[in-house]
Length: 198
Image (cartoon, rainbow, N blue to C red; front, side, top):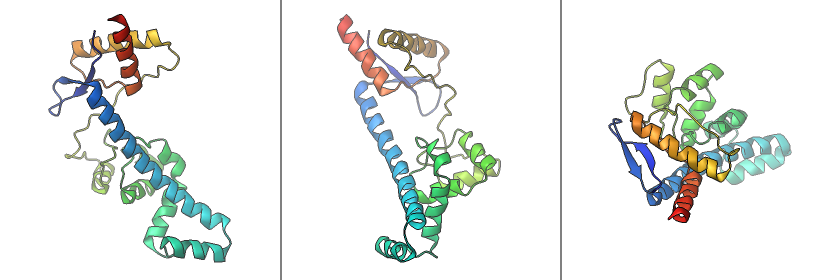
């Protein structure tokens, strides 16, 4: 048996098989996007921490070295991001990579942020305009990314149970014509199990 990973095809009506090689590149791509968002959060936290921890003259020197002015909008935006870092980190895999778009999320009221987070459109390529559209009650026509309806944590299962769950879920998804994308670690485990069985 060959391990398969299913994904939504652009028209959203069927599934295609993603090979382990393609999945490897997808994992690298998504990991890089996540690291970009994490770096923005870390830069923002560093700026705020420097403000809170350094003496006034030291902080002035810090700002000069990084090219910020305490009155600049860039500085103020990074501080706003830092103040919402904890909330933003909960969604780091879906955060936009553009720091200015992350700022747009940081300045939202909690209920507005939840509206965006629950819209199914929060993604690394999200724009500030999409955020505005969601808050206004519309949906963004440029976003064709389907929302995830299910997340299954399998860390409590042993390897054999995880492989069995993978196979059963793949079969169920094919039967109902829905897409599923398995984590690369599970795909690797299934591939290893397939090689052992051969």
